[in-house]
Length: 227
Image (tube, rainbow, N blue to C red; front, side):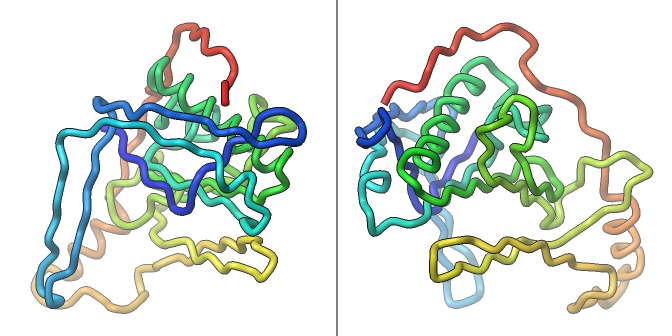
């Protein structure tokens, strides 16, 4: 199931100089709405909303000169990335809607002069320069996959596991400085108690599997993004 969140907001730009609103209908079959709250540092209360419908209008950030940076976060990476085998490329619908979102983000970067950054997870590894691929040649957005929190990693047996997180520093001009911080076998807090050594060995030596290619193999007539 596809899960999206918008860390800041998306911007849409039409034409060479002016920004116009772009309206997206929420797909109830591929959308979930959740909320979490920490309860007295002892438990986490979670809410999940099953019924969801409506639209999202993306226009204000591209037109607002006070907005310097747009950060988009999502579960599956947008199409034609380095991780296309495990991303929105899995279906024709995902390819078309994902490419439309990518086009709108790139227009916000190219035509409206915003700094645009894209973060995804889903693939359980860390990838930078996510969209530096032939399909996005000349229209590259800065992008990362950060999926190294502990789930089984999608790596060949010959590659070591790698855990960690992205540390993001926001500069005064709105530029993001993104750096990966690795969590190693010796990073505190260390596992203790019965089975600690076996657990650590499993996490760093065995917690991985090869991933297949779930990319859509047909032909999609998506058309252009229409703000």
